[in-house]
Length: 317
Image 1 (cartoon, rainbow, N blue to C red):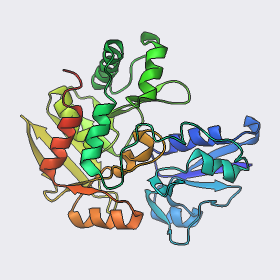
Image 2: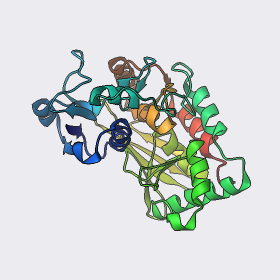
Image 3: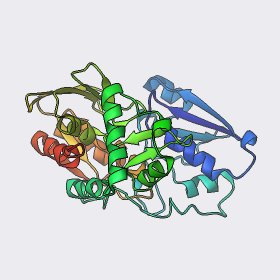
Image 4: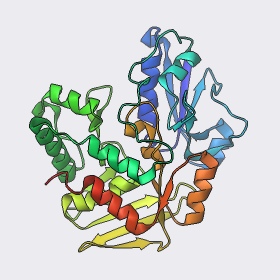
C-alpha cells in the first residue's frame, strides 16, 4: 500500500498525520510505503491534486476527496466523527481508509484537553490553557526548565536531563506534546517544528510559536521585547508585530486575529492551533472562516494581546 502525503513546506500538521497513520495501520510496517511530496505553489497543487495541506493519497487516490474542495496551498481541515474540524483525519477515519476499523483508540475517542466548544472562542481557550498548567511542584519545575531551554536556544532541552515519567505526565495533561520518538515537539507556546509564527528575541534566537495567540504571549512570558512575524493564510501577505517597552506596533495596522476554540478529539496542537492565525484584515479573516466552515471569534489587536498575556504571562513567575 502506497501512502503519499502532499504538503506545503513546514506544514505543522504533517507530523501529526504521520503519527496517526502509524497508529492506524495494523499491518507490517514495511508494507506501508509512506512518501512525501512538498508542494511549493498553487500551480503544483493543481498538477498533483493537493486540496490543502496536508492532502493524503492512498494508492494514488484521495480517500477524503470532497467535490467542494479546490486545489490549494492553504491549511486543509478534516471533519471528525462529531462533525468538528481538525488539521488531519482522525485515527479511526484513517483505519477505515487503510482497511482496519476494528479497533478504537482511547485517546482519540476522548476530548481530553481539547480547545473547547466551537463558539466559545477566547474564553474557552483561556480556560483550557490555564487548566493544563502544572500544579505539581516537580512537574512545574520541569515545565519551566523546558520553556527556558526553548527561550535560550530555540530548541527543547536534551531528554537525558529530564525525567521520562514526568514528561509523560506533562504530555498526558497537554502541557507539552511528545513525538513518536519521545522527543519534545511542543511546549506551549513553543514549537520544536517550524510553524507559520516566528518570534525573534533580543538575544538573536528565533523561536516558533504554535499559534498566533501563543506568539503574542511569548514577550509577556519572557518579559522581553520581541518581533513576531507571520503570514495571512488567505493572501500570504506578511504580518509583523513589534513589541518594545510593553508597547506593540502592528503592520499592517488593520491586522486581526481569528480564534477558534474548536472541540475535537485530542490535544490543542492537533485540534485548534492551526486555526488560530493572524489576518491582514477583518475581511480576510471572515473569508477564511467561511471557506473552511470554522466557527470562532475575531479579536482586535488589544484583545488578542491580552489573551496571549493571560495564557502565558505568568508561566515562569
